[in-house]
Length: 142
Image 1 (tube, rainbow, N blue to C red):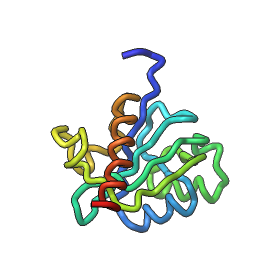
Image 2: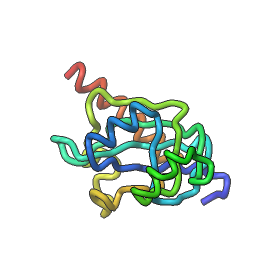
Image 3: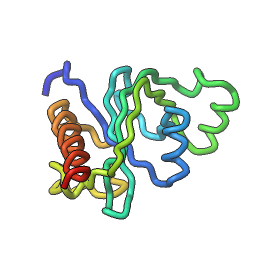
Image 4: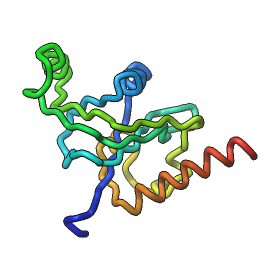
């Protein structure tokens, strides 16, 4: 794979409170270090009634390490073992969660928390976003 590849990632939200925080603040606190950079596409996933599902996506606008955060935010991150904050410049929520078992990742051996911070190629990201949009349309007009 090319060094110029624009990788995307899956970030799994474990609770509804964290999901709400991400959408309210447009910020995700990460305990996992990856090649986070501006313009990185992120798929958000969490457990739903349909099983693990993609609930939305975003594009990173800013990456802040602990020393770049306010003292209060830095303390909050340290309490939770988070290493950086990803601020989204764009953040979208799917009306209907898109079940991972219906996606191109249905045969992927990683499940549940093992999908957290999984790296995806640009082609995979594009295909998943297209399929999620089609799923929204399909469920609106069955």
